[in-house]
Length: 440
Image (cartoon, rainbow, N blue to C red; front, side, top):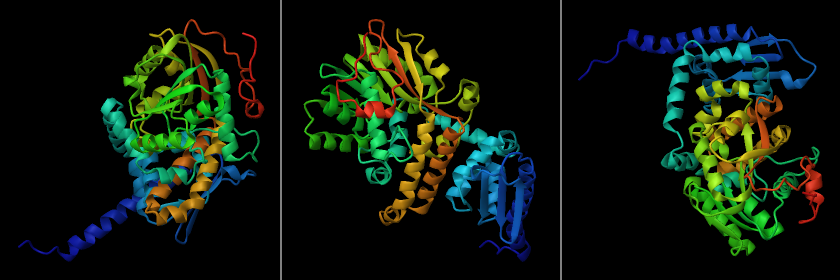
């Protein structure tokens, strides 16, 4: 039998984490002294630490409450991802996460230094984990399942009735989420000039929202695919319920396995799940699936070209906790990936400001649905993760750190797009199907 630990051993094991926490606390508070823009307060028991200066605009004021001193160690040892991990575990809270992330972005030099020092070990570990999650055919299915296996009920709790998990288009702050998503779908259909003669392929079906809209409103035939079993089952059910089985085909296939020739191609915020090294394969599939006069519209979250190289080397909060294997592309990376195809970019339009509002609506919906989600078995750690994730993204779009683009590519025989490019969401929503035509 092994000897019982001595009182000195017990005291040492208790003291060691406490000592590390104190050292980490000192290091973090020292780093925060460099805040030049905004006002951050850290409340830790009876102590209150103030950084920066109060601003007339609340968007740059935030207060952190520390619930466990291990918070400091997690941040110093894990950097930005460590702070997210500590939040998920309930070690700290904040009066307004979106404001906090905005403050971090405004003080990029001071705050992103958190990923240096000891945190470099965690950063490299996160990079290795991300590399292992790359989107091979098998890896893609595993990565998609990791996100969407949360269950359809979870997503239904915060999305609109059409289950659109992508940026909506708001004419004003009073537009409902459902109407804003309808406007987005109308705009996509009109940019592609959809009509009843078109055969359309969609890469990334979601829960069938676009396919149902395009087939029901414009009469075209849509083949749509997903590699999420949860999405596939519900999308097929929704197609049957709408009586559109003759116009909508739902597949459970990887984009690399799709066959056939189509007039139009749509992909709404799926490119982020493709991965940098697979962009050429994605656009090769687009070229192969489109007829010689075909058009493709891809709605993509984007990052500025000047930040893309650093983004590729990183494994941020989204890659680490939310979408394994994901990568936000830059416009330069996407256009470079089409070099081996005959696709040409004919239109690009940014809607990043609309995504901040979309994310705000989703976050509020999750907060309102939290009691029901807990009753359904979703724990507080998951709800905190989504609170952090949605706030993190909302601030990114508000600060133009990331953007949202609708991009149109054409094969050589395609006519110029006939829709009034740049029309507002309300223009698209008001126009009857088939009414929006311009001279070619």
